Image 1 (cartoon, helix red, strand yellow):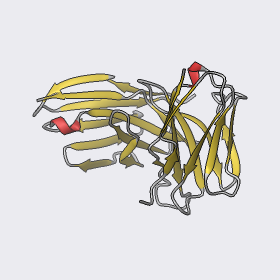
Image 2 (cartoon, rainbow over the protein chains, first blue to last red):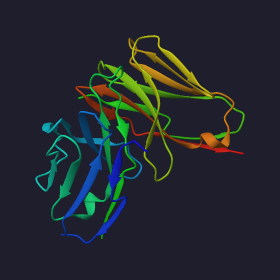
Image 3 (cartoon, each protein chain N blue to C red):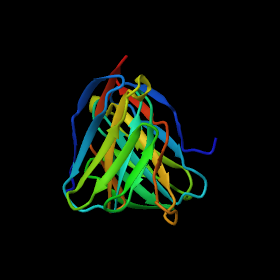
Length: 115
Length: 109
């Protein structure tokens, strides 16, 4: 399968712990996006990369959140000192800027539960 | 700030009926998307609409775009139970996708 993959698929943690999620984009996609989706809502943009450069961060992304894409391939999203409000589905998407529609393809998501 | 509003947010309908989901957005956008999401799953792309008057159809679903009215519609023809899901309208603005809250569609047998 050559789609976007995310790991882990589910994560349960206690409040105050740190968690890290990984996203592997579609091969050769130069852009990678992170979104967060809470129950009953649409996904909300968090941040995105073009190659290894982080181009934009949402105001939703507090100082406890950090994302990296060190070699322009996979990306990690780390949440420090998790809070119950961080419980959500974290979605990763990738795109290729030169493609016809520059369409974003979404991964299966990582569901985070903070107890 | 770009806002995307969907109407209705919840729809329960009988199999075999037709219905339309509406999507309004507040400022100009480069393109409009419709996605489907099943419970606990990720997003499946249904349609990408680029220009005014664009219409795309796939099976029982048809999407249209009126950029002047900043309105898109997703029309369901002769609904079947398999179409039960949440449908999101989204627009592209400055390389980011802005989503509506979604329409939860429940089709009764």
